[in-house]
Each structure stands twice: as structure tokens, then as C-alpha cells.
Image (cartoon, one colour):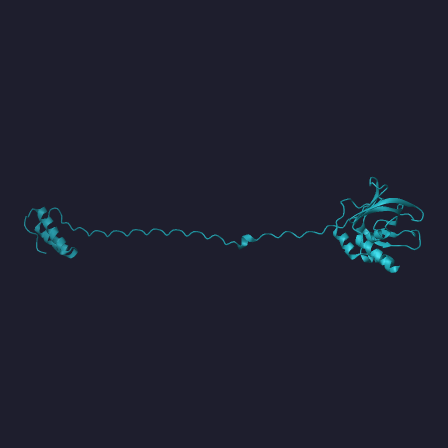
Length: 245
């Protein structure tokens, strides 16, 4: 019989998901489960649990976030004896007894919390590490996590995403090389200055001519002196040959 129960529990763990719904009895506003119970339709959506007065989910009376569960236990005595699981939240305590599929519901609640949150050893067999990872990786619905008493449970903040890497491709691109400036055109060489002209005065006496000839010998080539002598003779009207150089 014990082996069959273990197989049954393992089957329930495989078949249970983070989405579940069904009828259950719960304690009324945190009071003793033995004194007063309410029949509610429970709906599990990811990490959030909601409960309603009817099965069509038109009249919700409360909800809570399973990530705010402090502990799960199954009391064998006291004011909550007879319930399947005692759920202690940060804000209140709820005792629940499921009407059908008890093992499936226990696997759902016990796998939604960390193993150290389960305070009754007999409930540890319902904890599934794979299902627990599914609960922790599933964000759940967008409803706010409030209980039937109106208290608000703070949901776990989303983990920050790493910033996108900044492209640095511009650093790998070579800088454009500026075009070389054209070399300036060479300046033309200056033309050589013409040799100085050594012309005799328009009119000169023979003494002046001799003085001029001596000076021309020193300053001009022989051909230039001869040409200048002819010019001098023509100017003074001598008509003869120029003096010998």
C-alpha cells in the first residue's frame, strides 16, 4: 500500500502545473477552522491564488501571493485541526481543506515554496524541485496580491536586466587620411640682366674721347669698345676711325 501511495503522489506531482482550480473549505477571516469554515472556489495562476464565492469567478473574496508564504504545516491539534494545510502568510493565516484532488493541491502549494518553509515532515513528500523551479520562473498574473482582509503583500521585485552593450565599432574604423596638398609651382628664374651700356656723351673733345676710351677698355670687351668708338666719332663729327683700343 505504501508503494502505491508513493506512485500516486509521484503521478500527481507530474500532472500538477502552476495553473489549478477547484473547491475547498477555508477558515473565515483568520479565525479558528474548527469554529467556522467558508466554501470557496480556489484558482492558482502562477504565484497568485484567488478564491471566489462561485465557480464562474465573478465574486472574488480574496487573493494572495504564494511568494509571501512564511510556512506550511498540517496541525494535528489545536484550533485548526482537520485542515489539510495551514498557510501562514506575512499578513495572515489561512487554514484550507480541499474537497477533491488533495494530493494535487498539496503538491501545488508545497512546491510553490522553498523546502525549508515546510514545517511538517509529512508534507515534504509533496515538494517537487522541478515544479518549484516552474513557480519561481513564472511571473504569474498581473493582479495585485491582497488578502480578503484587504492587506497588501509586496510582490518580489523583478530582477534588473543587464544594459545592452554599447557598440564600439567606430573605434575600429581607421581615420580617413587627408589628401596631400599640391606642391607649389617653382618660381621662374630671373632673366640675366643685360650688360651695361657704355655710351659716350653726345659731344666730346678729343681729350674727352681719350679719357672715355681708357675707361671703356677697363669696363667693356674690345668689340663693345670698338662699337662705342664708332658711335662717338659719329657724334663728334670726326668721320675718322675710332681711336685704337
